[in-house]
Amino acid sequence: MRCVNRTRVKLSRAVIFRRLMLTALAPCLAACAVGPNYRTPQISLRPFHNIAKTESSSPPSKDEAFWWKSFHDPELDKIEARVLTQNLDLKAAFARVLQGRAIARSAAAQMLPTLDFSPQVSATRLSEEGLIGHIVREIPHFNRDYREYNVGGVASWELDIAGGLRRAHEAARDEFQAAEADRDGARLSMAAEAADTYFRIRGDQARLSIATDIFTANQKIFALTQQRRNREVTDERDLSSATAIVEASRQSVIEVEKDEELQLNRLDVLMGTQPGTYAGELRIFAQLPQAPSPVMTLQPLETLRHRPDVIASERHLAASNARIGEALANYYPKISLQGALGFESMSPHQLFTAPGFQPTATGALRWRIFDFGKISSDVSRARGRYAEALASYQSVMLRATEDVEDAFFHFSQTRRAVASQMHNVEALHHAADLTWQSYKMGALPFNDALQSNISLLNAQDRLTSMQAEEDRAAVECFRALGGGWQT
Image (cartoon, rainbow, N blue to C red; front, side, top):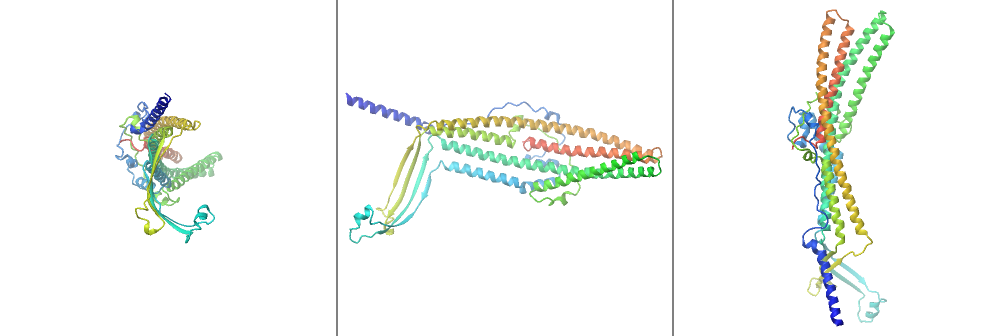
């Protein structure tokens, strides 16, 4: 009776062990990996309300990767080409992509067997005072010096039963894709900053010409006021006011020259060169290009998913999801196989012979049964990182919608302001013509004619600033949409 009970106990233990092994091998047999499978979070967005306010007047570039060609400015095209090939921040971003690619390849290689080839030659002098030396030193003609030759290879392979290695590879691949998105984001940011700087330079050049004309006109007014003061037609207060106006216009010229120089230096650095390298080329005056109008054909969600920062955040989220499975895989056993094929002999002449052949095969099972909650802590940390990445992704999406709304609102308002200022300039230009005609007929003094011309120049200066701001607002729209308005 006792033998029967012992047999039943043995059978029950065997059944329990078999069930445990089937439980451990179930993920491998099902050709899947533990942990949640990643799904892109579903986010509902309403249509952009500020895009509808922007009227389309000209189609953008067909290739959104080269969105700056929509401005049809050859000098801008040349600058962007230099930035994309010479900018040092972009080179650093490309280097990070190479690192991410190498890490992803390394993670993929962890799932494959490893083969090591390790030939060895050892020379040994046996101690006569050791255990073996005491035994064999009495043997006649015993030689204490001998050599051993060993040629072989060792192959090892960890069976990815629970899919931990596959999850680690997924995470590394997702991080690599995030690095690619970060590189695209750096490319977009550098190109947009270069275009913004270029338009500021062109705006400063146009404003500098107008500021110089205003300064010259104010000098003429000062000269007339001084002549009238010498004839005692006017008092010292008018002369002081004229002097202050001249100095204010002089300061305006200085401020514009200062900003132009700063922007030229900044653009040279963006092109990866020392400040002053391309200053001579850019000092050649050119008109501001006409800002292209945006054309939107995609829904908000599809539009924002073209933004590099959104892509990078989503890929980080996918990687954090895969890390959960990598942590969960530690609950399951790990099986590794190892085999060695080689030859061992004390004589090189007898090395590659049948008696010297020495194969070895090893199988190992490692299963962490109790670790005071370390695996549970790792899983909880991985889930916490996923929750953090999810909140970060949702926040990036919201900030992206904010960028789009702000950019298009700024663009539409700037375009309206430019149209209004153009009407203002036309009206002041007509008024200045009438004033000069009255002056030529002797109905008005020269001072009034100059003041009318200065008012026109100030309005033109304001218009030039607005036109530069309109171009910069268009660049802001390109950047907000991830590089282009059409896909």
